Picture 1 (spheres, one colour):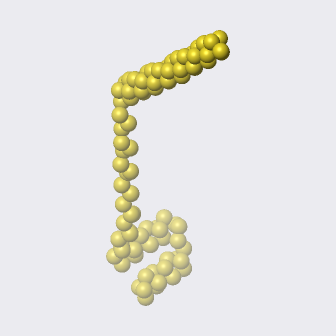
Picture 2: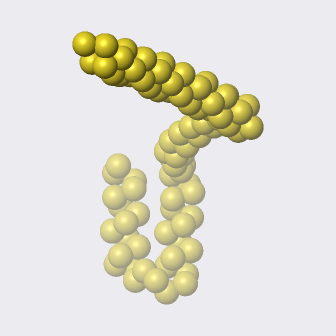
Picture 3: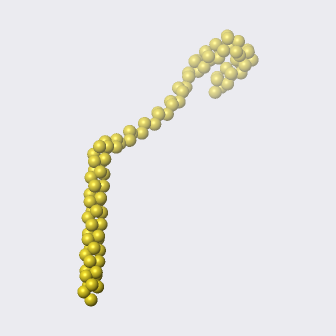
Amino acid sequence: MGLLRGMARTAVVAGTATAVSNRVSRRQAGRWQQQEYEQQAMAQPAPQPAPPAPAPAPAPEAPAEDSLADQLARLADLKAQGVLTDEEFAAAKARLLTG
């Protein structure tokens, strides 16, 4: 039984050595990976916050009501340029005056 006992002892020692070696290798690989991660994090600048969204454009102002005199003057200009006929001018002027 001495030979069998010697082989068993060798197997236990070899198995233990392999397990310890693998554990040390995994631990060391984890440390190296952590160091690489920290170096990359320090090398890269912090992300800049997104610029604020532009303010919405102000709503266009409603055109100011022209006075009756301004509207009549524009109609007279259109008639003088030949854009409006006498009948069209009279109808538009009547609409403005009756309002």
